[in-house]
Structure formats: C-alpha cells, structure tokens
Image (cartoon, rainbow, N blue to C red; front, side, top):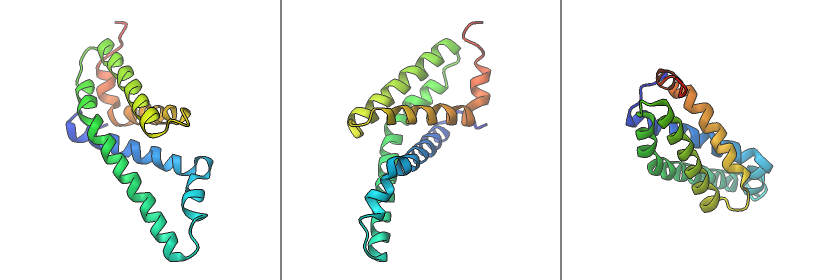
Length: 137
C-alpha cells in the first residue's frame, strides 16, 4: 500500500504501537484500574487520562526511534528468504525488548504486539512484500 521509505516505516511503527497500547488499555481493564478507579473528580479524570495518553505517546515514540532504521533496512531486502529471516529476527528482538524491559510480568503481551505488527506490516507494505516473491522459488 505504501512505498518502503524511512518515513513510512516510522509511521507504520507509530500506528502499530498506538494500536498495541490501545489494546493494552482494555486488556484486564488496565485503563479502568489505572485511570477511572483512581479519579474522584472530573479534573482528576482528565489529568489521569492525559497522563496515561502522554505515557503511551512517549513509549511509542521511544520504540519507534529504536526500531525504525532496522525495520526500514529489512523492508528493503530483495531476497525473500533473507527478508523473512530478517522479519523473524526483528520480531524476536522486539518481543524481547518489550517483554523483558517493559512488561516482564506478562509475556503474552509481546505476542499481541507481534500479531498486531504482522497484520499491519502486510496492510502497510503488502505490495513490497508480494514483489519479493516466495522464498521457495
């Protein structure tokens, strides 16, 4: 759908992380326990919601900064075998980074991140991925 350039790789990652953190807000009622249950007034609700949103934006930008260059490099690989190997390594490193640095208590969340990433990767770059052909040809 979009051309493989550095900017599009960064946009893909931002969208991916925003979707992932949005999903996390509703898993096990995190948003309710972190924001809604803590707020006693409308001002506190606004303050806690804003704080939660700012944390999501900061984490999303931080992860995007870390992973944009490697992802862009992998997306530009022409050989299908090397491309899929690169994507697999990328997903493993991203899983380890998120799971062991940000969420060591719940390892399944890294799998949600990977699933969202694969779906959006195809949605964003399906034309480029199909042009690489099959790794078995």
